[in-house]
Amino acid sequence: MAPTLRRVTAMAPLHLEVLAGAAALDRQVRWVAVSELEDPTPFLEGGELVLTTGMRLDAGNALPYVSRLVARGVTGLGFGVGLSHEDVPAELVEAAAVAGLPLIKVPRDTPFIAIGKAVSELLAAEQYEEISRAFAAQGRLTRAALQPEGMSAVIERLAREIDGWALLLDPAGAVRHAARTGQPAARAHALEPELARLRAPGAPSSIALSVPGEHVIVQPLGRRGFFAVGSARPFTPVGHTVVNAAGSLLTLGLEQGREQRAAERRVRAAVLRLLLAGERAAAGETVAAMGEELPAEPFVVLACDTDEPLAHGFPYGGLTVTLAGQAEAEGVIARVARRGRVGASGPMAYAELALGLDQAERALASAAPIARFPELAGQGVLSLLDPAAAAAFSAALLAPLREYGSRADLIESLRAYLACNGHWDAAAQRLGVHRHTLRYRMKRVSELLGRDLDDPAARAELWIALSYGSA
Image (cartoon, rainbow, N blue to C red):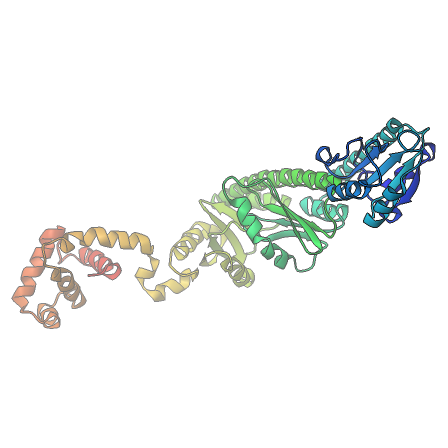
């Protein structure tokens, strides 16, 4: 933060005297500019302490001169006496007082260069202090990152450093950790438009926004998620430095966490292989080292299409397989079903684990979000088939019948024939045709499909195809 005009005028060696605008002395002095121009504003940025000896000032142009300085956002005006003017013109004092512009009398013995040097030294001291505060804050954030809590500790520390709130969000925008904020889910939902902008191609590296009473910064963490911070006060350069440092630590923490999770998945996959090989004791020792223990028999094997961490969860192909005691199985099923699909085996012992895996996979392949293998038998064999695969099989098998000229009645004739278990009279009556007509059609079906309709296996395949196809 730049030094204030009050601090500059209070420096005894400069012998400065405030003649007007004392109420505005807390304005920041960003630089010192010396100019004898009647209109120096084209060469100013705002925030300067302008010094002049008034070579071009007189009673007639004092008010326009002050008005131009105020419009440009000048912090204050220093008037050097003893050269062009023995004292500060009364008209200038009056104009500055009316405009609220601090007017400072600079004695003849105080060179303008002394004021410039004093302000430069104050600016350098402020910058050094800001850098020191930023380094100290980065050190506290780094120590937080080394704590067992990891990223949640960084979020807590960050909220304290900026005297506001902080959120760590996953790639979908859900809250992972929150600090010093009520209703974090509502805050995350309000930030969804900004998250959408950061996900888009060519997105900015961060987004800063201001709403009444709050200033917010949102940054992406690679592809691992986002974090957001908010404060009632605007972010200073130190604040921005602290936020950027926290972003680097959070990105590193997420990457390290990903590597740790990958290593853990490899260990868990090895445990599942040990169990399938009958090495239950070795598998139990391995999971014990991870702070877990294998469930007692009998247990239920669950095949889940979610990557959510689960107790006794093991990677298996593209799925997560978990072993749940019978008492806990329903709770685990309900939890997984909120984020994905799950298939459950019947009660198993470790010697039957391979069978349990097969049952769980077959149950998962059914169309239901939650499927239990023991219940599938009551739903018929069709419930065990993958709908997409069965539909593709149907389309390929029945294609010759659909493509046979305009005789689309071959499919319906086949359906009636199979539904009546090959009884010609019953099937012909259902179709409203003579049985000889039906015999001719079935002969044509057999020739087109290359299948013997008297073969039970062929009949079963055709019935499945008809069940998943449409005429």
